[in-house]
Length: 148
Image (tube, rainbow, N blue to C red; front, side):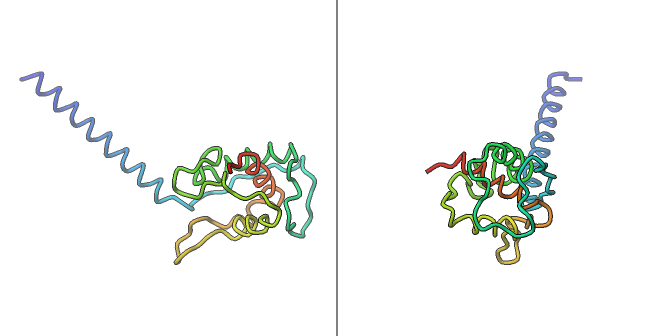
């Protein structure tokens, strides 16, 4: 038996197998866009906002909300929008969001209702899964990583 050919064939088969597994994994990630299971966000240290939805971010520049928003973003949004809000191309780069108070309602509408185009879910709705406090904390954190 030719040991050299056996090793070469085995090595080639292992490479092909590893490549197939990598492609299957990558395809699974691309297909999973919008398929996010929201994670609970502990907002117990924030001022409660009550049942009425706020039109302007009540936590702007609040250090505790920013801390919570950072964690909440990484748990619930980074899968599509990227760690640190640096998009990998799947979803918009949220570092470019406008921080003007008049754009807060637009942000909240998107996170509450999600985004669907032509029947395809680009972002799932988070209302009923994340509290208003968690959503505004995420926005407060996003404002700290904003790029012009």
